[in-house]
Each structure stands twice: as structure tokens, then as C-alpha cells.
Image (cartoon, rainbow, N blue to C red):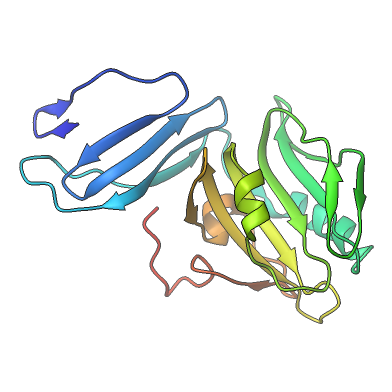
Length: 197
């Protein structure tokens, strides 16, 4: 609990729940990410405020790394594909594991130690499906790219902390401009839309 005098309570192994004046939050930290998201808003009297946050330990991901992955997705617009981004000790690198995709399904071996994961929905819109919610139970940034057959493919981003999610803006994840032919979707799409992180 976040008392006015400071945090009190014991820490968990993978993540912690923190109760503050605005409700219940989940937080975690790895070698690459430090994050906290609100999971249950509530007014709790007598406790101090807690804020949501996302910090990438090695700084934001350069936009050209994402663009390399986007090129991989665009090469097969009718097929679901996957790529991830890993910090290799010196720079962020693209990771493309062996995979099998169709127009509506994708199987792959999830790579270890990644900061972000992205998959495509082929010609369908960019959204996080119930299957994505079940599969994306790690601690990292997640993204979905859709409408790969359109002049402006779509992208939606979120932070995942072991099954708890929060929408993200491009600038919270990437360094550099968003590709001009990419349309940002979801709650974290526009700068005019509020996000808690």
C-alpha cells in the first residue's frame, strides 16, 4: 500500500500489486522494462497517489527497427506474420522466429528476452483479439498491424504486464517519426487522446 509516508508491504517475485488513492495497480520490472498500470480504479481514502508509467531501460526503440519489421509483414499482406524486438547489449535488433501463418492464424515459437512483439492480422483490422489476450501474458510491449492491403496499414500498441494491459502512444515506445503510411489505432493512437501511462 502506498501510504503518505511511503510504500509498505512485501514484494512479489514477478510483479506487485500496489494500492494507492486512485485504486489498484500492477507493477513489474525486468532488465528492459519498468512499468505500472491501473487495473481497478477506486477512491481509497488515506493513501497516497500512484501513477502509471512505462520506462524502457535502453531508451525507446528506433523507428527504423519497426520499419524493418513492417516491411516483413507487408511482404505477405494476406498472411498473419510475427516479429519481435530484442536488446542485444548494444542495440535493438529485429527477431523473426520460424513461423507458419495463414490468412487467419499464426503459429510460432515465442522468442525469449524480447522487449516488444508485433504480429499482423493480414487484411483484417488492427485490434487485440480474445486469442491475443490469452496468448500475450508476458511483460512487454505488444502491437498488432492490420489492413496490410490498404494504402495506410493500421497499428495498435499496448503494454502488457502478465495479463493486464494499457494502451500506448507511438512516442512512448519508439524514437523517430511514425511511418507516414501507417495509421495509428486504438486508445493510444492520437496525442489528443488521454492515456494513463
